[in-house]
Image (tube, rainbow, N blue to C red):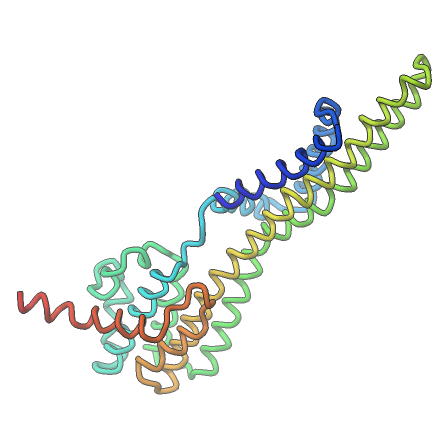
Length: 293
């Protein structure tokens, strides 16, 4: 919804200011120039991307209408789940987690957090590296290097739509100039018109430059920035899981390990130390409350 709100502010500000100086809205209605600018921009987008990039961009656009999935409550659940997994591993050994990671939906630990189980990216990241830790054939340095490579690969792939949209946005002002030049050529080529009649055609042609710049910096480029922000949100979650698991590999107890992960989160989503501690305590006490009932 913030995207729509931003678009409304852009349109209201630009057209409102234009109206205040006595501008006529009808002069801005130039569908031919919109076709030139949008069509050329779309063509450049298709020409500069492969099928994978185009499909990734199309899949990404509907997600922009929703806010970030990784709010504070999700981060609390994630840190608590990691705590429970690491506490079980510390108490019973890493092999005790084998059944949990092989079938998370049937695991008592994982199934308590359906929102996380339904996130394939997070689940795959957690279970893959727990599986490697269970194997015992890789040390912390090797696993950290592998995690870094995977996160880097994710960021590179996830940035493809943002880069494609940013490139398209950068091209729109130039295509606006193309539309304006074509309008000027049309005006100057109208030999039957007198000088007074050429003026309105020149004015209409200049709308192309206006539209190209407005569409680029008011509509397309902000979408590219929003995509990058969402990629950063996911990357931070993966970084948080990474430092938590590495802390466990370096023999830190679970409360300290999840503190490493908590510190890796953005401040807006990061729960406080007390919030996380209380949340973990409530989860640990839940089985005993149920048994007492």
